[in-house]
Length: 306
Image (cartoon, rainbow, N blue to C red; front, side):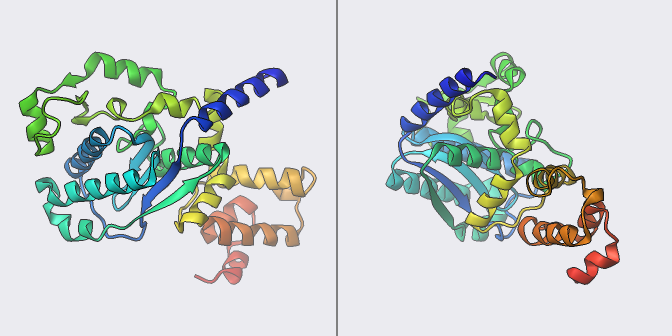
């Protein structure tokens, strides 16, 4: 990308960010008991997010993901309206018959709002949320994890499939689905894969417009490990990284701090410094550190007894 194109696109992104209003990273606590145990319970949660989103059209959800015991949202709106949105979400989760087994735990859900005050922070939060499911489950990626808006980002095929395969609901079907009459006559409610599609209520195109290009987005999702780590620290989450994630970070450190040396040529002192960073900042496991830094496991275990 030529420098003038980079500047032009970045200025466009900045302008769009300035138009978004107040933005927040909204999440519930990570150490909560498991809420959703199977596909049917996840589907119920997805429909409840849709219900709350339709009731609060002034809340613009850029993306979200539902984990088995917590939620993440990147959204914009007035703070008091965001809090009302969350209150409605929890109330509907608690009253949904498909989630009766988790009623007590749902009642104790606690959400925090973290203000986002600049474009790069919003980009990083969107990327953090969209890769969350893939970080937790090594068999998933940003295009396969179903319980959120992540797989629709820069994915033309997913959108075409939605247009060709979606099912529109009747008023009676809406009442049955949401256990409410509030959306029976309104709401652009379309079902795909057994639940209301996020394409009906998430502002994904607006979120995509905050990135210069699709390549820029994929860099943020797959390579910008440092930004992900900083967000996890700021919200108090303990997330784990794949070998590929950590290798990308190690390569960056070697290039910037150790004059382009490869791991195999680093001094013992440099490797120990890197090992400490991986352990304390990235929650890397001992065997993982041993593999990545080509150090004996007994040395790593002496540094970080398990």
